[in-house]
Length: 279
Length: 343
Image 1 (cartoon, each protein chain N blue to C red):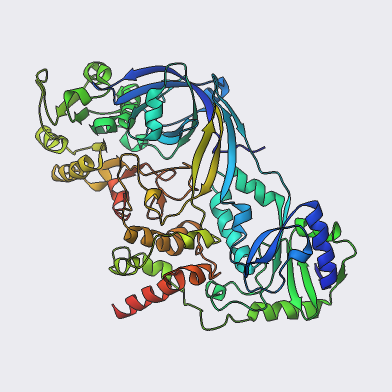
Image 2 (cartoon, rainbow over the protein chains, first blue to last red):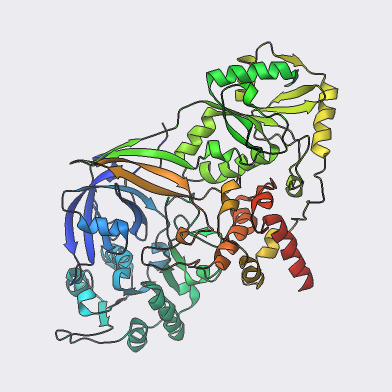
């Protein structure tokens, strides 16, 4: 019987890490129960997987672990709807369904040898984290790295153990953090991501900017990048649409003639400008 | 291979098929002829222009269980594949053409939808050429015709007091040689070809033909046109067009569970519904009827042609007949061409 792409594999949640102060984002580390499935799950940064909580449904979630670190998958999930609510109720050891990987990936080939500017907002750092760790695991292949990350408040910053610690230890790698609203513990910048980005003023020379975050942040970040001199081919971003099948059949995730599930989620700004603004 | 079959023999064959497999055929109930499961040839309507609903209902049913799961303590997933053999009789040329368009989406590319693929494999399609197309038919606009047979396993053409029959696939030959044994007679080749030609050249009535030539290219630059605001006002968002359409294939996946076990099923969805693209966070990229109406016609006449090189419409005319406010694809094609002509 040929494989049915809509049938998930059984996987176990090994570890759950609350990311934010109010734990509305949690990272789930997952392994497939069948070692052959785990071994055969070859993905690239930027790809997504369909997570099933049986009895509730499925949701497409970006893979936040790096393919350079094998043996498990990680998904950082914000509590947003029915499936993510159910996932947040899950405990370590619980079984879920996972199928994938789906979609295209970040253009590592185009990024090689370039200076990299990562711009993340809130949970938008999840897919970027896969890429950042992927790049840092092969640090010598890339130029200067700037990571700009912002969240609504200090408590909303995700992956602090990496953002504040692991990432800053790499050579020629800078992490720039900002929040929309500070609190009594926060001594860093208080600014929206696009404004903060313009203050940092990273050079577009030999650079690629990769950005992911809420639509409103993306909109203004793209304008800021243009101001800084980044061309449309130097800017990479991701799209998010409602999905059901993940394999280009169920119809709903199209933007123009592209299906975000198989043709996306990663697009350069030049590619995006070829599509109707219906996302 | 070309043969003939007498109406009585055809009834005998259909009775036999109804005993051996699930037989789907046109049948009239409360004045409406639909394709539906029948138990005997006596239930079948042989004189009809087209069925109210299409063969889609049996290849891509409104709801189909995909897998069973058990969640008490552990997690067990068991795939469900449709296995029952079915024969569909009386499939019209527009629906045969529509199956080919569905196939492109559901069975080609990197992934195939396994349930649909299984049903396609288990189904024998017996086509029936159109003697009297309805006043809503416009298949010829897309290059199909009342005798279009591609997609059928066995094609029948009413020819006076008998049927001309042509086998087009191994499944069709299997049907003629198996249950059909002794019921068919060899046909006179030249006369048979003349019958086929007459069907292929038959015109659709009442001037419903539309000029679709180049509509895909025109729509490349039509996304922002005021036209979509104008026509979407009268749309009720009922989704009838998508349900009766033989090529609309959008679906959703839903779980139904009770007491630690349940099923996941695939069921029809419609781009006409607000929830279709509404995301968990509340954002909806197609929030009003304008975007949804535009999406449906752009998909059929522009997006799908870009991906698969044909229009996602075969001119069956069901949406023309059934849209409660008369907003249908033939009208949209005419309008868009008119808007462009006056622009």
